[in-house]
Length: 247
Image (cartoon, rainbow, N blue to C red; front, side):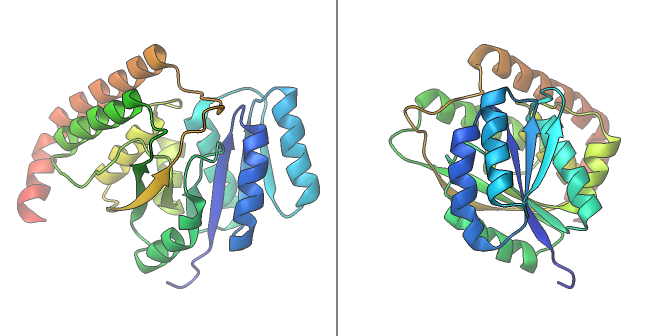
């Protein structure tokens, strides 16, 4: 692809110390990095300032207040568009994903520039049972809503997006900006005609890691996202049927 210009986008909330290590580990891949400070407290802000001081080439976007993962992602996409990048690799700041997969995902994106290149988790023994169950629940609903088995995992945050359709989505659509975000953007972009490929990514849950996931509150949010998308799917069913028949 001509003008293939990918960057790495890392939304950061409360994972300042972990993010320092993540950034140090991924600098070897020589891809531009955009960090989004999602309205953090001073401890995390200090870590992000340290990263910026040590690596001035890294772009730091600062939000005045916490806007959630989707809100931080939106701010990063807008900045990536302004800087002329063609693709965004979303990487979580907590370091739970195997970031050695970055070159592989970038190459797959170069080969298939109009597609989303998404990770699905390969868990080790550290993975909590409720996390695995949550992923299975989400994946089942995605199959129903999209009339497709293409979505292998709806919640893994290791993904590469083409900037243009992603920018249109985050600037023109209303969407869940917190824990329902990964599900919503995946399904909405698929409905908009963006195809998807999935590849495995090893996932580790550190015993002393900080989680921004709150079981009751965030499961309610994700369930509400699926409810909205299901209602939209019913309205769109003639279009989905047409695509199914004539794809």
